Amino acid sequence: MIDFHTHTPAWETASWLGGATFGAAEFVDFMDQSAIDQAVVLSHDGLFNSTPQANEALAEFVAAFPDRLIGFGSYNPRRPEALAETKRSFAELGLKGLKLHPWLQGFSMHEQILDPIMEVVAEHSGILLCHDGTPPYSTAGQIAALARRHPTVPVILGHAGLHDLWRESLAYANATDNLYICICGTPPYAAREICRRGAPGKVLFGTDAGLSDKASQDYAQARVAEIDHWGITAAEKQAMLIDNPAKLLERLP
Image (cartoon, rainbow, N blue to C red):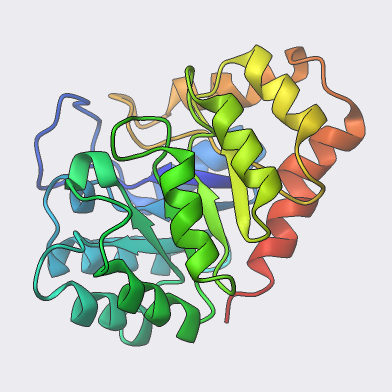
């Protein structure tokens, strides 16, 4: 099983989430308990306060288990050093993708500054994972417009539209060649429909682990267990948890 949406702790930044502090070994213990073989790990601090140190902490975290943990850096694209930091995250820190959160980081997906950043992601054969499902900045149509301008970069809708915008996220993912949809925090009835109607190879799964006030990430374990009650077929489950994410990760250097 591959979990395409997890987080490090918020080591330096206070947020309303109030998660626990844990190390890479504790996180891999959670993965073992949930039968997760690999996880894409995103910086938590980087969403609330973009700093080079947040990307460095993420790189150190995933380096402890390089066969299990895959790091995607993050930086607010409006910051003047954003392009240089994105280059550094790939070339020097060895991170494999980029996470953008238009809602928390406070920018529009239509801003031109994103284009040179996407060119860096393309140069390093990386992947973009973007928060979606939260208007006004984080909607699938806005993210799809960026994806279509950069067709060689796989772009992932990180929450499959959450509760209200999942239909839009599904429609844009199906209509955009390089746009993928990650079921993460999505209600079960929507997850079932996405698995049934999603274009072949496009549907992924994520727990959003790392935000809990317990290192054991109990809510994330519950999300994995919940899948058996969605009413999806064995083939749909295999595609979402194993085949689709594995094929997407094959492009990473």
